[in-house]
Length: 296
Image (tube, rainbow, N blue to C red; front, side, top):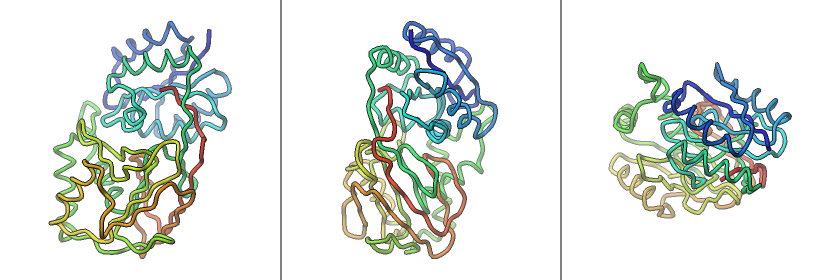
């Protein structure tokens, strides 16, 4: 029987001992499971690096932040399985896995036993890998505001209603406008930039936000960048994201790219997979084609 490390973040929004027990039970027929818990931010990177040398697969039960840590720790191609344990769980949902962690674990176990994997690309910005998305400016600013808001007493991140409220405050603080503030090499100037490795940039409840609808895990990176944004245009931006119709006047779009270089007029917030990387004045994005094998 194959062996698999199960890296678990016990602090993720939807990880509980009872759910972990259920996930372990459903995986047991397919592999010998070694469960390893993280105990601090960044811990999963080291755990994944070691686990990849001792197991046939590395599985992760967490949210998108720890999924990101794991792909940054893996130094060789080994089957990876992502079990949704966070609030949004963009990566497993974009890969087509169920939102229920037990159902997702069962599909991953079946894929592991059958040797069935899907090869996907990964992105990298300033040396840090990402799985589904990265951004400069407005969305990274929102992620920072969510982090500042903090978790509830039960460890859960703020819900969608709170996120909408934080976004409204963010726009109000900027007098409801984002002006051109960065240069995307070869495309032009824009207010902020979304860089996508998958068709779903994020989710609002059950709905995918498809700011880069042509992006695919198997292709290069896509970049979408509004030239400028006013408050009256914000509902249109959201509707375009929900409908997947983001190619329009006033929006820069680059598809299936290996490199994207962005220079900012002044330091701007950067995120990868919803993780705040601080402020940068330059960001160099690269696509690592065929970099990972996932169980999905």
